[in-house]
Amino acid sequence: MRLSLTTWNINSVRLRIDLVAKFLKSARPDVLCLQETKCIDDAFPLKRFKRLGYEHVALNGQKGYHGVAIVSRIPFESKDIRTFCDKVDSRHISVSFGTQANIAKPLVLHNFYVPAGGDIPDPALNEKFDHKLRFLDEMTACEPLHPRGDDRHILVGDLNVAPHENDVWSHKQLLKVVSHTPVETEKLKAALAAGEWVDVARERIPMSEKVYTWWSYRSADWTVGDRGRRLDHIWVSRALKDAVQDFKILRDARSWERPSDHVPVTVTLEV
Image (tube, one colour):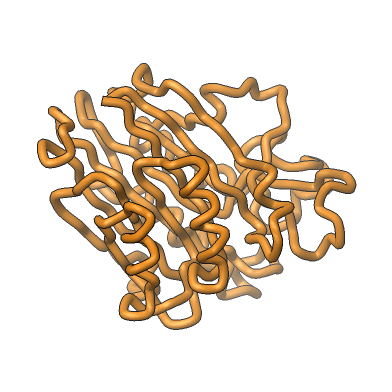
């Protein structure tokens, strides 16, 4: 079975539901993972998604902040929500797919929204940055995020870290900017290594090439200078490494009317 999966920090699902609908009608991924939905579960636009053919929905929402969701055209069989740093702030949700979706071997999907970390890259001075570092440490230590052997797991989301030199527009200028500081990049790499994950983008695209999924709202024209960062990630367990068939970043979505500052990132696998 061929499975296509998209991750997208939508920055308010209700505000941008028309953009989501536009994308779903065009790309038709089997599964869409959203971050920063910014609404409680009861306010999530379920009816719109169901009209679009996405009848299976898992939600972990929060009023006005954060929030993650998984919407799917194929059924999933279980849902789980994990908390990190002793905070109930709607930053994780996972589902598993199996025989109901005509998938012979179980497939576990994690959707994350890692804390952004504020503006000051010093945990002693910035509580938000301290929270981010502790969150990454807990991801590294979390055993359910450590697929082994034949485990078929996928981890996606806005991880809010651009880990490699060419994941940012200027490695030198961003070394002291939150999302690309050495302490963050090393902690994200540690989480990747602890689970023996494969970073799909960097498996498919050479390290020598620039890759971005986010462009700041602070720039009047995001295309000028192309000052982006790769904050949105798709990881697969080693058992799925050879199953990856395609990988796409929809850069054009950053130019849509009233866009998110992130764009959709899609992987296609033979599962």
